[in-house]
Image 1: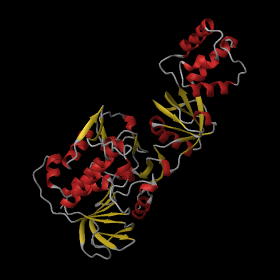
Image 2: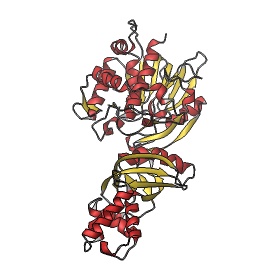
Image 3: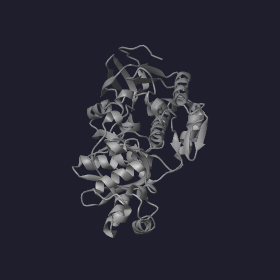
Image 4: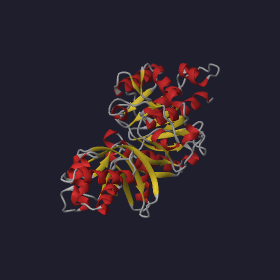
Length: 431
């Protein structure tokens, strides 16, 4: 889908920097009368727009292929305040609402993608991310949107006639409107980059440097014996004074050096911010959140009475994975082997270990292992209705380049599509 590259003196109605989900959505919504009529509910305003997308990867939608482990989790019907993170705390909820998952699903269906509901998680019925990429590709062709791949945007400057000059590594282009959809720095192997921050800098727009989010957490404890273990837990993020900063229940996955799993990914934004601020961070795992500590202690006492000859390992195996049981007993550093050899104080410590198994975080995983980035354009300079810069009339910032990141479960793709739609419709409406 490459167009003619090089110096191009024509003035496009729109140039989009980035062919990810947000950028392609913006381009389509800026040019498609049928989609405009379905979602805007206004009189038909047929627009003929000349649009160019410039993408640094050799293929469009490269990150989309990895979304939802290749299944492409489009959206999620569950919606709460904890779904999105931003320095400007309430900005995301001025952009996206509780019912917008329906809009994302309808948009996908407009592109010809059948959507399937899996307990509130929505996927293409094919369970293949490639279905979404092909649908985008076909609609770009239908709308006669030019796409230059393998080309990097390196500069942006307003001209005296209020158009903009886009400088790439292969030429110059001119446009009346610009959409910055460059994404974040996560997953550089899939095209993640902080190049968008350079463009924001050229425009004088403040931004927060990208940091990894939705990622594993490194801990100082040695956990070689736990590698491969998965366990449900209520995970609490605490500082050195034991103040609670965040809490979530889910499956924790252990490696020899890191904690992983969706619950850890969702907490990694908070942990990353705390580490960046120089705070000491610990994760407290309640391995049996359905049982309070007093009842767990009484169970151990009863087990000791009824099974005095059984091992400590056997006592714990009824509650946690055997490798976790071994790890917990190693932390207690007891020489005793039988449950009958523990006194009441030691039984209490055993209950405490299961309810408050603690790990000390040393770092987040790097950008190469992160699913998204936290950071990006300061959203105080963004109109939440149009995604337009409040200080530049014809420049829009969307998707992961904004200082907003979502938890696991389709929320980041929802954000990409909704912000792309808002920008695209605003351009479609413009004269």
